Figure (cartoon, rainbow, N blue to C red):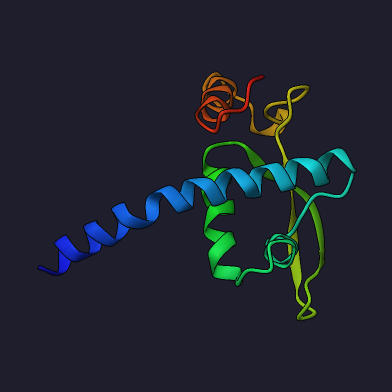
Length: 118
């Protein structure tokens, strides 16, 4: 019964996770275009959400090769240092240091799943 309840809960929340993932990527993309990028705390603050509502979506976007850390760190609202993430863009879907024969196509495919054309 426990596994079935977990599966049902996951199926119930999956659409909202996908919507949040799209919103998070779009926000990071806009911040990337503005030359800033985002920490997980920046994203949570922007959406007035708790950190553990948006941070897992950033992890998923990173695993999908749609965002990546740019090497910078900046302070969060709590004063901790956090990695700054930037979005893969049309001009540079995957940064050179992460490139291999799979990452470029994976990024294009993942963006298409989000409804973003490149």
